[in-house]
Image (cartoon, rainbow, N blue to C red; front, side, top):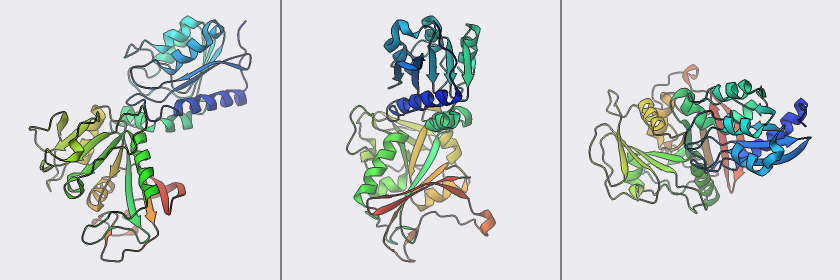
Amino acid sequence: MTDAAASPGEDARWMAHALQLAARGRLTTRPNPRVGCVLVRAGRNIGEGYHRRAGEPHAEVHALAAAAEAARGATAYVTLEPCSHHGRTPPCADALIAAGVQRVVVAVEDPNPQVAGRGIAALRAAGMTVDIGCLAGPAAALNRGFFSRMQRGRPWVTLKLAASLDGRTAMASGESQWISGEAARADVHRQRAEAGAVMVAAATVLADDPQLTLRPAPDGVAPPDRIVLDARAEVPAGARVWADDGARRFWLTAEPGAAPSGVHRLTVATRADGRLRLDQALAVLAAAEVNAVLVEAGSRLAGALIDSRLPDELVVYLAPRLLGDAALGMANLPGLTGLADAPALRWTDTRTVGADLRLTAQFI
């Protein structure tokens, strides 16, 4: 007995459940994408799974193991095209074929050039019905960092700022701890975990000696990559950002040279003013399999990123206090001469976090 094709509404319902499963891997799958799979037969869930971390079985393998022999003739709902190549694990397309699955509903094609339609072609060549595009938007959004790395050759960039109600990020003296409240700072740690990488300028390290870790560290979640932009290689070997806690640590400088033990020192070209080429910095990080990065920036780095049109998203924690005209602004954008030149954004989320307001917008 085989499963009949479901209605579009049923397909969307099961794919939505597969996306919920995929989201369970938000903090653990990097550099792999987050993927969920549900096997359905006669309108009943007979097996499900999600990809938990790189090197471990993919979502389809977990779902097939749960379904066992009942998978024959079933429909598989997969949030990303099943892989067709041997990576850390065998091809999932082969596993679906071997299990006798009749129909596969795929939310979105895999942008990885090693897959890129080959998994779907293999399924169809084996006689399966394959439908593509069910909840494609949410599926791509769940893996926006992976898609960015594969399609654009750079990570998804979220620029994070904490500011007063009048848009100031620090006093004229540089004092900024703490503009935002405890709940907002805890939310930043969650954002670090989800991005999987956090980046700062050398000036921040020299001024504050931050750890850039997760506090508290969730069980089973690897510490985020720590990235320092430091054209003149000024950050000392004893800086806390270089502490070996299992995180990958990247030191992006203008010249090759020695680095603290375990730190990856990567060379990036400079601009005429001696500052690092930020587009090249992101390309170097993509080559190191960084999918997404949370940039915790001061006004100079924020301005340089925005001026280069590199951030994808802006997250501002707005505190209910006023710092005055002498305090430092959010982004140094000296080249703007008129409103027509100002970068435009669209709001995607607004919510309170403790006593603060968290504003999220994407650059357009």
